[in-house]
Length: 65
Image (cartoon, rainbow, N blue to C red):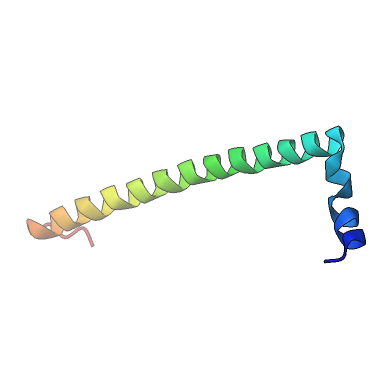
């Protein structure tokens, strides 16, 4: 990368407002990611519980399907 291109790309992030804006965007991405992961984990746990119940019913001979 040439120095002019590097200065053009990094230039806005050298000011205080640019750094704060970048940190706010990073914070939003982290918070949204945590929320989505918590929802995903709940879905995985519900699917696991349903699978265990269906397996248990199938083991004792009570097939729900």
